[in-house]
Amino acid sequence: MANAHAHAHCIRAHSDTASADANLQVRVVADVPLPGSASRFDAAFAFGRTGGGRVGHWIVQSTSDAPSPPNVLAQVDSDRTDYRFPVAAPLSPSFTDGSVSVHRTPVSRHVDRACGVVFRYQDENDYYLTRANALEDNVRFYYVKNGRRIQLSNWSGKVTSGAWHELRVEFQGDHVEVYWDGTKRIDAHDRTFSGPGRVGVWTKADSYTLFDDLTARPHGS
Image 1 (tube, rainbow, N blue to C red):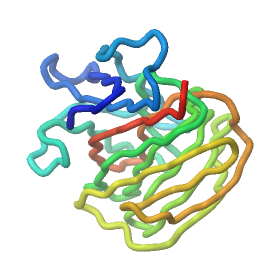
Image 2 (cartoon, helix red, strand yellow):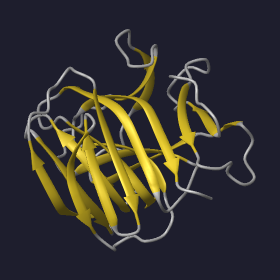
Image 3 (cartoon, rainbow, N blue to C red):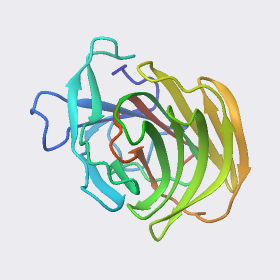
Image 4 (cartoon, rainbow, N blue to C red):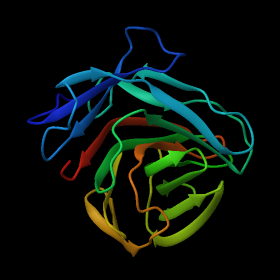
C-alpha cells in the first residue's frame, strides 16, 4: 500500500493465515500526532463475525491490479449463511470523530457480493457500518447493536463487481456522510454510538471481497 504522509501512523498487519512476509499496511492519518504513538508501529487485525455461520477466512494475497500493489486483504470463506457478517478490525487506533476509507472490489459468490467499512467499532456485535452491494446495486448505512443490524439510510445506484471502488465515511458527533467513488451518497444523523471505537472492513455471507488502502483519519487527539 501507499506510504503515509505527515503525521501518519502506519500499521503493518497480517492475518494468522498469511505468510510472515505478506504484510498489509493500514494508514492512520492524524490531524496531530497521536499521543503515545511512534511514527511506525505493528498491530494485528482482530477477526470477528456478526450473526451465524463460520467466522471467516481472511488472507493477505498479491493482486496485480490493486490500487497500491501488490498486497490486499481478502475474505475467501464461501459459507452461504445469509445472516453472517465477517469483520476484520485493526486493534488500533480508536477514536470518536474522523473518517475511514477503503478501496474494495466485490469479486464473486452466489448469495451476496457485499463489502463495507465499520467505525466506532466496539466488538463484533456493536458498531456502525456502511456497505455497498453489487447484487442489489445500492449503498447503505446501518448500526449494529447486540448483533442486530438496523438500516438508517440507503442510496440506489450501480455497484459493479470485479472493479475497484472507494468507499469513504466521515463522522462527527451524530452526523455521518457516506461517499461512493468520491461522491456523497448518504447524509444521515444517529446517536446510537457516541463514543470512541475502532475501524475495519466487513463482508456478508459468501462474499469474496478484496480490500486495499484502508485509511483512518482521526480528528484531533
